[in-house]
Length: 178
Image: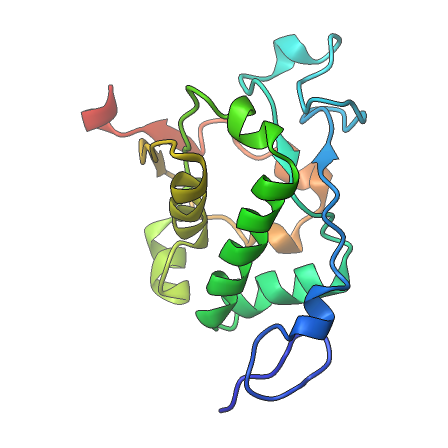
């Protein structure tokens, strides 16, 4: 089937130039535990003891329809060209927000693994591929050190509360990473 722009259905591309211009390059920086907005993406003082993550940021708000459709096209519809567009957008984000490269100095990228059953259903691990994209941009290594131990319903279909209360042992360190 021919490619169609996720924003306007123009044929031949997954994201046309006109729709690309509609994307807001605004980073989402907030505490990964409570969601309180801050300027560096670090866990806030109240929540810092409740997480092992130093900081988290999102390059785009998921409520941007073009971004949401682009991710869904890649992740669920298997449109591989969408990952190329996502890589271009992430690269542009790192150019517009130069501090991202400074922030990532000394960082490692750990992709969230899929359960083998989900990997077979989907055919690829989009988190691993996304980690590899970031690795190229940030010059940070990908460390594939986690293993998923439990098959769960797709997290995208679950509420934030359910995702946060999943079994804490859903991931374990791979033996060769210990």
